[in-house]
Length: 358
Image (cartoon, rainbow, N blue to C red; front, side, top):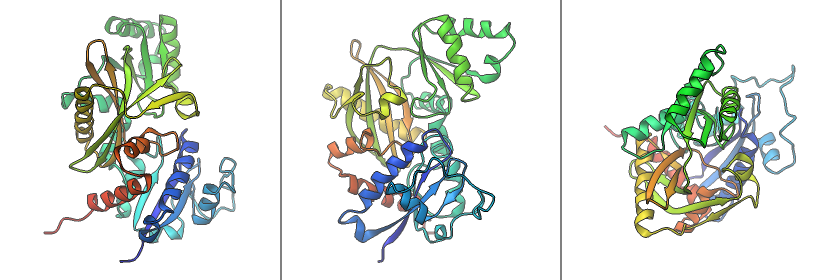
């Protein structure tokens, strides 16, 4: 059997564009290792911030750091509009999307790849969409019986309403949740647009800010807890990794802390009682199945050490693959090397998208 042509798809129309480029570089290097080189040929494709697809020549130059992706924009002479793909796309055997955030892990690119009728790594349309929308995600978790902190969902139209309605909205939130609270856009990843609030004035400002990012907003009760994470790998019969813990100095695990070297510490494996670790691993797999997961996910939890309670926070259906990212590090500690992880993800994609024999 010859090499499989893996279409490495990165960049994208989201605020996590730059992180996607870094993840794609790590993945490209992981495929260029002994064992993977014999099985796979990687063809990179780059999506500009304005949605234009670029073929392997430009994409490879960006991965190698020879071209700065930021200033690249479509011109009047551009012959590759948004609704057309580079010709090399037709030769891809399996896609490996590494597009974080909106238009990448929310089911939209997955729907496009589904229409191409070519296997792709990771979660499908449903799992991606539910995993991206924090309100839909929490509904799925509740249906699976997974414990969560208290939360309230509101809309942009409620926040940006007349001056008489907005104060009543804040009153209702305060009646249901105590300070501190976390205000989050429902459909953004990597802690973008999230604020920790400790007063009415901070709540009002945070709601206004979050409404600028998304039309659906979630407000969650703050909890004094350890933040732990578990990686999941598989399809219908997933496996859970060791559990890791994140410690940091700031108010919460925001975007800057997440992607700045030295701002957070990862403890892998997390120093937890064996029974707590086992429960977190079981909950991670339950959460993965609750959103109809496929391929990979990272599931985040709050562990309240004083009471022994475990609350699920969220599922990330396309976690980062940078050198700082928890997902590959968790599997590395579990005994799965980075190159082998990539190999397994491709094989899981082929399995998930295989047409059943009749």
